[in-house]
Every structure is written in C-alpha cells, then in structure tokens.
Image (cartoon, rainbow, N blue to C red; front, side):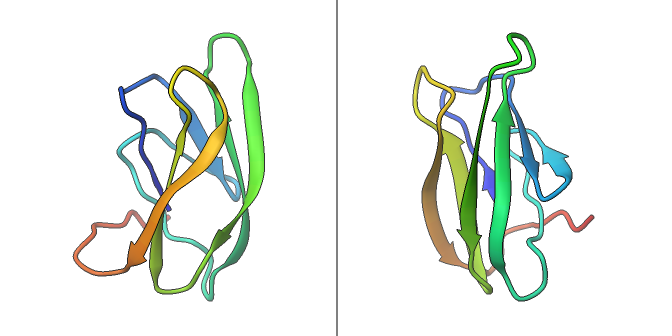
Length: 87
C-alpha cells in the first residue's frame, strides 16, 4: 500500500500497526487480505479509518478526498518496479 495526497498535506497513515506518510509505501501482509487503514492529521486529532482490501500482487494507493479527511482508494495496479518499504 502506498499513501498519496495531492496537494501534499501533513497526514499520517496507519496500516496494520505500521505508520507511513504521503509518498511512502508499505508491504501488505503475505497473501493480501483486509487491512485496517487509518489517517490522522496530527493537529486536530481528526481521523478516519476503513477496512480496505489489499490484494496479493497489487499496489493499492490510498489517499484522502481533497479538503477532507476521508480515506479512499486512489487506484490499484500490478506490482512491478515500484519501490516498497518492507518493515
């Protein structure tokens, strides 16, 4: 999963116990599945979370709606040359 925010905003995404900021990626659990994804703006303690599907062999990009703190799936594509941070 990768976090993308346009325009860039100081947000923190939590994915299954790990945290990333916009522009970073994190490997999903082996085999894929459902992953609890949360986003927090860090300033007003506003947050939103959803259970999102993280299919095996796919890069899922998550983001927020412009001007809001509402999680959404931006797109999914096959894994390839995309750099992934493996925690």
